[in-house]
Amino acid sequence: MADDRRRPLRDDELARIAHAIDPRARATFSAPILGGLDAATYALDLDIAGERRELVVRISTLENERDGAAARRYWKAIAGIPTTAPLLVPRPVHLDAEGSLVGLPCLVMTRLAGTPLARPTNEDSWIDQLAGAVASIHGVDVNSLPADYRRNPKPADLMDERLTRWPPRILEDLWREVADALRRAAPVVISNGMVLTHHDFWFGNTLWSGERLTGIVDWDGALIDDPGIDVGYARGDMQLVLAGDAPDRLLARYEARRGPVLAMPFWDLVAALPAFRWLSDWVVGYREVGRSELTDDLARERLESFVRAALRGL
Image (tube, rainbow, N blue to C red; front, side, top):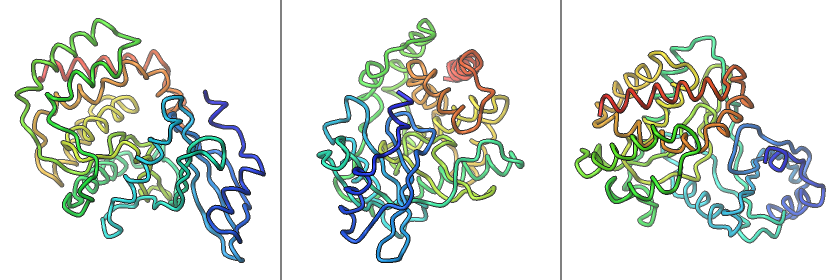
């Protein structure tokens, strides 16, 4: 999987991409971007009549995303966020959902400055900025989004779908405890309202220049939903990377900006569901972006601790 996502783009592929964007364009640089698991992403520099343009090419490589739906979904997700929103978001440039340029569906977008920051010198500021980024996503006025922007129904309406989407590969007994708890809790969970959500918020999907957060990427899961799902994802990320009180520190910084998050243990469990299936793949991604100390065993231990704490709090 990693090799397929890391192969260099061929000269003929680069030429087709460049021409699709501007007939005068020529590619001057291309390199894989590390960290992603569900697509191949590349930095691409173009020369257009003497002007340099810095872009990202995102290619849908998964078997179930080769029909172009994922590329169209990503395009709509970022195109629908107003340019006036207080977010540093890639902007769409070219969509090839049919796969005519590289043989698979692809999307070209603007490239934001920065790279993921895995080992900050100021951990407290790092957590604070991550919490601020989540809060800024949730601060976008949903009325400014297109009327057909993707939206999730109530948690109870989605629970069976969430549970069947990610059957567990690890900790099966614990997963069954989580599934039972979520089925009981979903019909009565108190809503935090509906906001723009990212649905895959972890530090690897943020960009930094030095120790200043400069952008948020990987928006293909974005939709209008309860903000608890993003806070749960971000807390789970802090648990896998730092453990200890890091998830609670992030929550406190988020709540200082947006107010209390209701039913946090419920959303922690919902956000943890994919980890029961994909944790080993996540570890690969974490290691690629600089957390080389994270092993499968350590990640599993930290996941179990996070989940059991949420079960106790539910």
